[in-house]
View 1: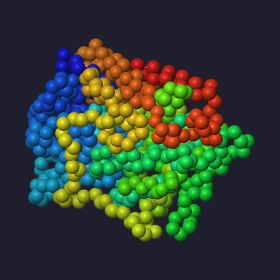
View 2 (view 1 turned 60 degrees about the vertical axis):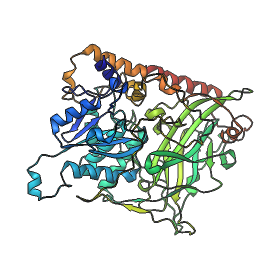
View 3 (view 1 turned 135 degrees about the horizontal axis):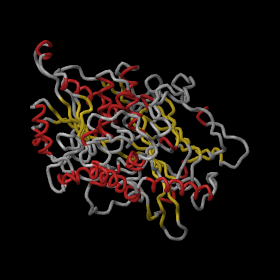
View 4 (view 1 turned 90 degrees about the horizontal axis):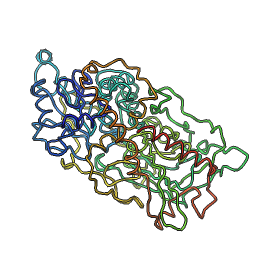
Length: 564
C-alpha cells in the first residue's frame, strides 16, 4: 500500500527502478529527489528518509551530500543524514534569490570534484567524483532550477541541453517540462547570461520601483510590489498600490492609440535616454518550447486599442535586493453583500541586474499576461486580468545622498574557500499562511483581506502534486519529443502507473485553484486598493466588455476542466 501511495504522489515524476524511490540521476554526479520524511504519516507516501540514506550509502558510501531548498522546513533533522547537508531555502513555486546562485553552484562544484579536500590534483584524480543530492518538496521546480544552474555554470552545458536533460531524467514521457514555472525558467536564462556573458559577475543592489504601466487592466485588480526578506526564506509585500496612485493615460474608449508612456521614461544620471527594455529571457510557453536569449524586447504598441494605466507610488518603493516580484489579484464584487470573488491570481519575478542593470542605473522590464506565473507554479491564473505590463525601475540611492547605491559584489567562491549558507528554518514542516500569489510560503500578514488557510484533513500529497498540474494537463496536447529515458522500461506495473497518472491529474486541478480563488470579505481598505474601475469609480474602467469577461471566464475554467 505504501508503494502505491508513493507512486500516486510521485505522479508525473519518474521513480528509480532499483530503489523504488522518487529520485533520478540527472547526471552521474547529481541526484534529484523529492523531500524525504522520517515521520508518519508522511513517510507512507513520501520517500522514507532511512530508505533514501540506505540507498545512498550502498551506492556511494560516504561520497554523497544533500543540498536542500525548502523554506517550509526539511521535515527531518540534519543528524539523520550524518550532517552532510547544505541549506539554501527559498519559497516554493518561486525562483531563488539570485545572490544564492554562486554559493549553491560553487559549493556543489567543490564537493563533486573534491576541491574542498587537501592534497594534490594527481591524488584527487585517482578518486571518483562525489554525488550531490538536491531536493525541495517535489524535487522538480526548485531542484531543477539549481541542477540546471550547476550544469550551465560549472559543467559548461547549454541552457537548452540542461533543461532537456532534467526533463528526460525526472519526468514521465508526455508530462511536460521538469522546470516549467516561467520565472524559474527566466532565472535559468539569467544563469546562462551570468556565466557566458558577464564573467560570473553579479552585484546585489537595492531597487526602487518608479512606475508600473499596465495595458488592458480589468476591473477590480490589485497590484502589489514584493521582494525577498530573511535571507530569501520569506516574501514580503513592500507596497500595495491604491487608487490615488494611478493615472489613466487612456481609458480604452478614445479613437487614438495611446503612446507608450515608457518612451518618455527613465534616464541615467547623465540624462541619457535608456533602452526601453534590457534583453530578457522569455519564459517557456506552449508556443515557445525553448528559452530564448536573443529575442528583442517588445516595444510596439498593442494591436488592439487597450486601456493604459500608470501606477506611481506616493513614496519611494525600495526593495533591498535586485529580485522584484509584481503581484496581481483580481476581485469581482457582489453588490450590497460585502463579499468579493477572487477570480485572478498572477505574479512575475525579474532581477534588475539582468534587465539592464549591469550597464545602467535604471531600466524597464516587461511581460505579457500569458508569460506570468500562475497559481502554485502553473500557467492557470483564472480570468484574464490584464494584457501586458512594464515596470520602470532604477537603483535606489544611498541613504541621505542622491547617488545610487553601489551595491555588494557577489563572487563565485574559489576552490577550497569557505562558502556561506542560509540559516535554515525549523526542520519541522510548517505550511505557509496563504497569499494572494498562490503559494504556501511564509509571508507578511499585511495581505489585505487574505484569509488564513483552513486546517487541512487531507494528506499532504495533494500539495505536492499541485506544482505539477500544469505539466499533467498538457499530456493530450503535446507529444514529448524526448527520447525514451533509460529508466522508462522499468514500469512493471502498468495499472499502478495509470493509477498514478490519473490520480496526479485529478488531485491537481480544481482543488489547487479552489484554495486561492474564492470569496473574500471586503473591508474599507479593499475599497481603496481594488483598482481599475471597480464599483463607484468609472474613470479607470477598461475596455473589456461584460460579454468578453464572460468569455474569458468560460475559456479559463474550460482549460481547468481539461486538466482533470
